[in-house]
Image (cartoon, helix red, strand yellow):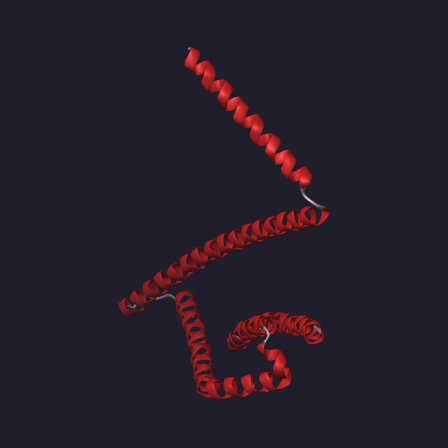
Length: 205
């Protein structure tokens, strides 16, 4: 019993000492250090919120993917059923219309996919030349400032975002999704504006 009492007293003393050390450390911190800590806490909080939003988005996308997969499997099973009925000669007029519509949509999707593949193949052959040309143009535009790490980070970020958005627009156009293509174009314009502002700051510095 006495040993337990001593252990509790020691733990309480350590807890009070630790709290006092934290208070004295915070009290001895200067205004610049306090400001830096506050800024760091804010950044950590923003990063946690962003990660939380990304997890939610990923969860929604996975859920939607499962739903679409289920719909596709249902349609595939229905098409197989209609094909069997056609072979047996027991296909009704409504079922025949349904099957023709399904096959027409299937052929349309395949045509879009073939168009997309042809465009991508053509773009891939020209990619090395266009990439080299773009790199030379960027180096010439920035001159000696191109060697700065901040400039390289910004150029790399801008190039990655533009490549992703252009690829997304390419797919949207091939799929005939005009609204999505227009939305991606707005994002491209937004990214270009952001890059121009950042480039102006880096050129001054």
